[in-house]
Image (cartoon, rainbow, N blue to C red; front, side, top):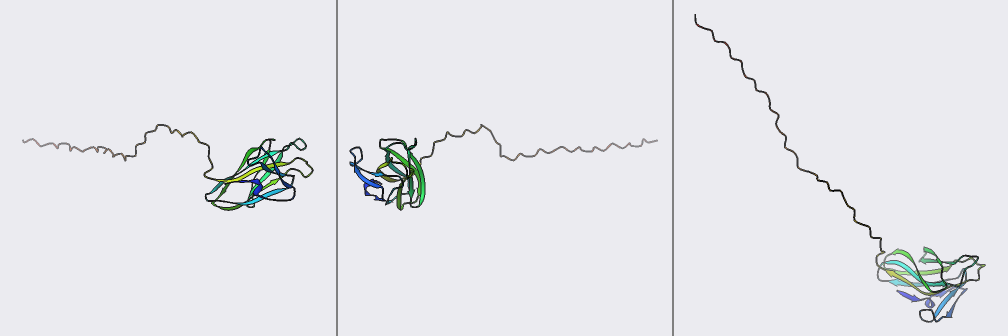
Length: 168
C-alpha cells in the first residue's frame, strides 16, 4: 500500500508544496522536528515501510535524517543523502493489520535545511534472505549393520590312550 504524503496528518513545521518532480505533483516539506503520520492497513504481514524522500541540503556538513515508526516501534533512522527523490526503506515484522506510520525529521532544530516526502508505503511478503550456497558434506560411507560375531574355536581334548597290558 503506497499513499501520497499529502494524505498524512502533519505537525507544525510541515507544509504541502507543489513539485513537478513529485509523484502526483506535490510533496510535504518537513522542517527539523516536524512529523507526519497516518493509519495504514495491510491484508498481509508487513515486512517493510518505505518512504520516497529528498533533502534540501546538508546542515553543518551532515545530511538530514528521518526516523520511521510503525505504531510506537522505531524501525530506523535513515540518512537522506540526495537532493532528488530517492526510495528509502526499513524492515518491519508485523502481522496483517492496521498501523500508524510516523515519519519524523530528526535534523537538529537549528538547521534551516528541510526534508521533503513524496510517498510512504507499507509492504507485505517475506523479507528476502541472502541465498547461501549449499553445504557439501564429505563422501563418507557408514555401515549401520550389526556385525555377526565369529565363534572362537575351543580346543577339544583328545584322551590319551591307555596302555593295554600284554598277556604273559
